[in-house]
Amino acid sequence: MTIGPEPASAPAPRKRSAWPVFTIGAATVLAAVAWLLVPGSPEPAPRAQAQPSPAKTSTSPKPVPRVELDAPIDHGSMVELTWRAPEGFDSAVVVADGTGAAKTTIVRRQRTMKVPVDPGRKYCFLIQITDGGGVQESAPRPIRGAICRN
Image 1 (cartoon, rainbow, N blue to C red):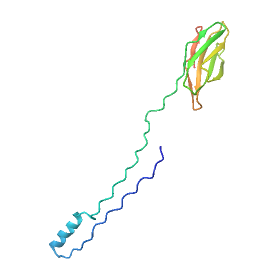
Image 2 (tube, helix red, strand yellow; image 1 turned 90 degrees about the vertical axis):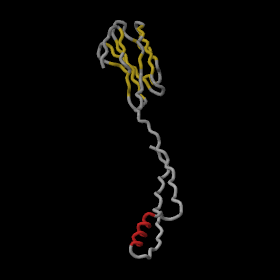
Image 3 (cartoon, one colour; image 1 turned 90 degrees about the horizontal axis):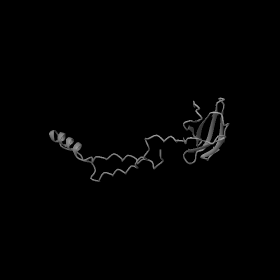
Image 4 (cartoon, rainbow, N blue to C red; image 1 turned 30 degrees about the vertical axis):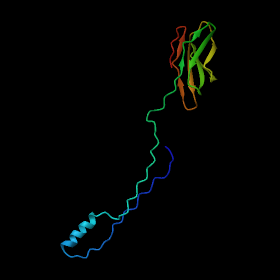
């Protein structure tokens, strides 16, 4: 929606010239018909002012921001994570191990993180992003044969 000038007012109705008809009978009827058909004032009609064009609005929905987590790199006691997210979004790393408890670490504008892990345990990782208007999540990524569920 935009704010613009107020719309132009409608032009004033044109006045018809009121020339008298003094004849009687058929001439009166003909004169009355002619009076209805003859254009009014000899002055040119005012031109309509150009209306401002309405602002163009997008009909397509705003694209949903995407976050993509690359395959985790398992180094035994540490896992290396890398992801892609739009500029201006804060990130959080969610790590779930086999105990069912998930740990979330807010990393703000980072796009990589090294996560210490227990060498014998299965893990699932996912990334959440937000710009304060909603949260998007990456697909979960497992290591060591883990089965990830949301």
